[in-house]
Length: 127
Image 1: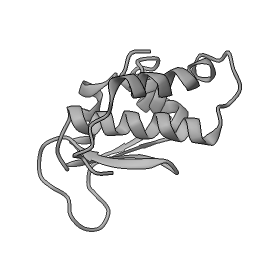
Image 2: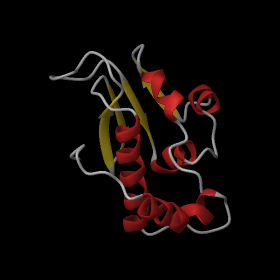
Image 3: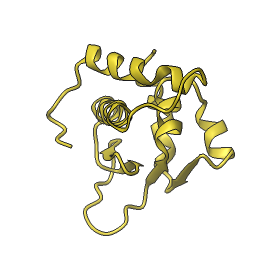
Image 4: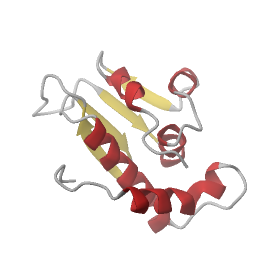
């Protein structure tokens, strides 16, 4: 995703609101398009508030972004990676789940010394 495209805060809030009942355990899993939009916009927001290329945050199959200032990664598997599923990412992005709890429970895979710096930028949206 191009880092030059800033995220409209209203669009982000609307996307998260569309999946909020599911995140809160009060609704069915959202449509794939709604889930993808919420994940992509929240990841782009993270990249905007933590610009850089030293950490890759992956939420397969929806999106991945590079963020956090520091040494730039250019080839092969990045040394600093955060990977999780869509629900866990959105819970982290909205403050519904704490970083340490997610990592300790195995809901987030973290590798590299700089990957934990993502935690300092969360949540990226309040819903």
